[in-house]
Length: 135
Image (cartoon, rainbow, N blue to C red):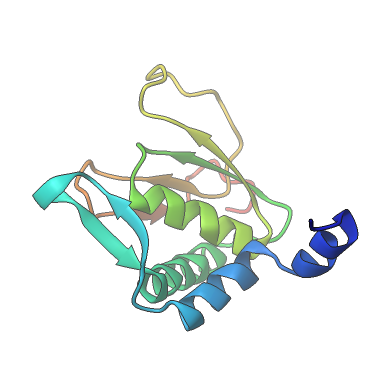
């Protein structure tokens, strides 16, 4: 039986970004994230997921998002949602999700970056809204 101390020692220092890096190195071509069912399914490997998250992280940083900021993600359950959320974690940003099943009226928020999609499975857009506190 594993003790609490042994468990604590085995995970000490492991963060989500470190786990993503480790998995991309150790399990590079294994499936990390699958979306869809049957022939319509798409799968990202661990190395591809890490690459997508890194690119998205750089994009968010270039738009001015930084540690301690809050980010609202409004999109359906899809790989881009996971990528956006993981990118926020890499930056130390607090991401909050609103799903497409909620009301079409979004709360009035002061935002730094708004993430959204046009409905296609691979397109994503980043924009800095006019009401951004850092405009």
